[in-house]
Image 1: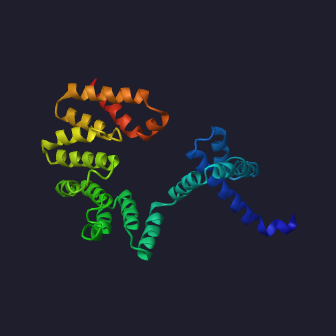
Image 2: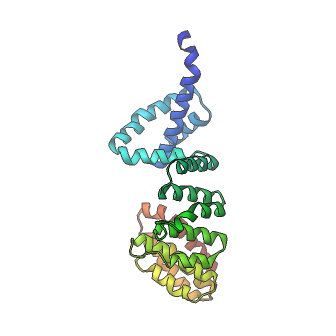
Image 3: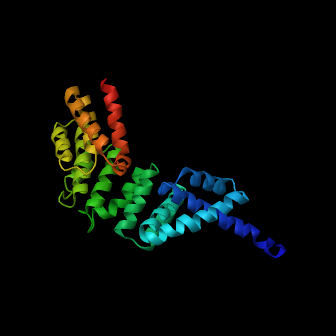
Length: 263
């Protein structure tokens, strides 16, 4: 035991790191509560028994899940661990990757992080060179830049970029583009927003356009039309799978709030 004494701090750090990774994995994969509680104690409070349980989790749950679905589970854990880093740290790392290799993905990643940090001007500057280069018509660039314009209140610029997006790229791109376009038109008081919302709802891949259109209808004083739309969303939610409910939670909650507003 004396021989191990110099290495005990390192062993403790490794065990605590495994506990953090295990906790992230447990949260992402929705493991039973007792795992989350035990791993939480190990990650934040330490303790020999909690540390032992974190090892048990790693060898009985984490490693087998990685073997069963190595790529998916591994990516999920990596995303979870990455999400634990402070936003400023992630921005610095993204900037370093961009400095090393100036690619579309690296610029888009950095811009997204800057936007999350409440720095839309920096994010727009990061994308600026793409808007005049070979990626000027890339849907990812146009959508990301348009979202930043909306956040900055430059609705006309957002509308101009969104009209350039190729709606044939994918159903998801079409839904997102038309939803943002309707928001930009609405913010400028343009009547075109009504039809754009309707177009966004057709073949939509998310509940967002319906929820936002319902809010638009309420602002326009069309409560009956909004109530019909909100009832449709409620019916969709009641029939949806658990996965879809989780995926669309924000919009189902928005719709529920709007229904209360109409009562």
